[in-house]
Length: 102
Image (cartoon, rainbow, N blue to C red; front, side, top):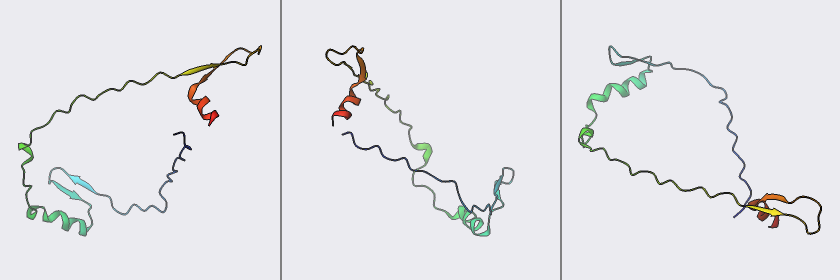
């Protein structure tokens, strides 16, 4: 129940990065600019691609059900004091006490 906390993975920055291609889109001609030849050949075939079986305009939008909000339980605190001690009682979170016991 109260296991060890998992270590957070460290993600490093990219190394040996090379910026080889800079592409853009020309809105007047409706074409991509600066693409490598291999990529251009993929986009040139768009007229020959099969059409979708279902026209997206016929799909009715659905309305998602309202999300259920779960109440957050209030933290539980225990008042700890040693019998006959002159020190004031200590307020401790109950989860902390459980961890100390096990």
